[in-house]
Amino acid sequence: MNLANNTVLITGGASGIGLALAQRFVQAGSQVIAVGRREDKLREAQAQLPGLHTRVCDVASATDRQELLRWVQAEFAQVNVLVNNAGIQNRLQLTTDNQDWDTLRQEIVINVEAPIHLAMLFIPHLQQQPNPVIINVTSGLSFAPAAFAPIYSATKAALHSFTLSLRHQLAATPIKVLEIVPPAVNTDLGGAGLHTFGVPVDAFADSIMERLANGEEEVGYGTSEEIRQASRQEIDARFQLINNR
Ligand SMILES: NC(=O)c1ccc[n+]([C@@H]2O[C@H](COP(=O)([O-])OP(=O)(O)OC[C@H]3O[C@@H](n4cnc5c(N)ncnc54)[C@H](OP(=O)(O)O)[C@@H]3O)[C@@H](O)[C@H]2O)c1
Image (cartoon, rainbow, N blue to C red; front, side, top):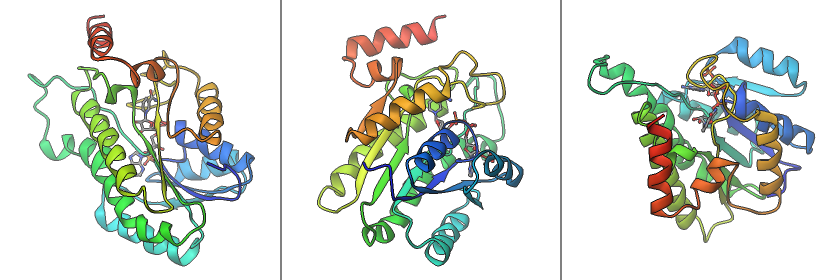
């Protein structure tokens, strides 16, 4: 994809991977709108990245998603790129963590329901724009799950699957469908300090954006680049490695 001259809507664009992608789109000459729930985080991101536009929206709410499309059409009708990046990660023991289901299912709603609904809501709008693109942010765990985050891993496998179907269905339209497959990246995903073992976000984002600019459709980095192309045997070996530490 061309990284310049876009108007890019990034869910979860105020922190971590979303903010790193936002910075690179802006540097390349695109406008970016960052979406998130926390207004203070959006303000902080704006201070770091002058020119960043922001919108408070909880993608867990179907009403908020519909309102986001209405707002885009009224305020930024030129939006031609949707990045489904917002996500949460919970670690839980299925045998002992009897948390309230309404709390647990938020991970499914935010990580799967929201990107599917947003893609479907935005397709008619994107079809009217030049160079339209939908980018879904999945995970290396889409391919080999981390059992300590069982719902999360399942949501990312589902989003990878949906991305393949979306690309297939949109093949005859101008909308390109791209997938970013991060490995563990050093962000605050799941809570501060839980991903410090991950790769630096800037090195990851530089590599991903370069490859998207070169026309690749599905891009990983380090271990996620390996796993997205692995054989079943290699996936099983990776599963053992992740889960038997
Ligand atoms: N870091 C990793 O190791 C890693 C690995 C593989 C995949 N990923 C994926 O990369 C994406 C970005 O994660 P990250 O690592 O950058 O973590 P992060 O810094 O925690 O970013 C997640 C972002 O999503 C937003 N968000 C969460 N729930 C939302 C909601 N209901 N509505 C709107 N925005 C919401 C958060 O903002 P608010 O809380 O303000 O809403 C936050 O800005 C996620 O999809 C994650 O699953 C990350």
